[in-house]
Amino acid sequence: MLIFDLHSIGNKLLTIRKHTGMTQAEVAEAAGLSDRTYADIERGTVNMRTETILRICNVLHITPDEILTEDSTSLTVRQTELWERLNTCTPKEKDTALQILSVYLKSLD
Image (tube, rainbow, N blue to C red; front, top):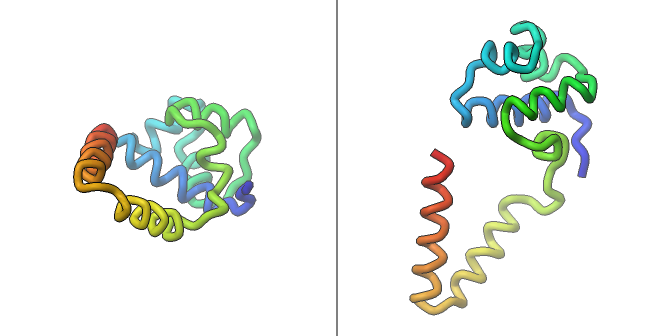
């Protein structure tokens, strides 16, 4: 589902930028924007052209759908489904699943 709320898009950009360890100034410079413009984008107070979205996404190494769409299924529902599925697994399968999750989470650091 597409997001049309500029504040939601800005919040997603903020979260992604912080996860990458970049400052607003670094993203702005790499995307060819003023610091003020990028700050306004993260605050959700300015509308972006498609070209601007693409440049920011390129800098953050993400695709536009990561900031312009949201899941139709809530995170809580998906978590519950995964826990229910995990509970039907054997102890060995659970251990393997948790090891895979652990490796994935470490790769995010």
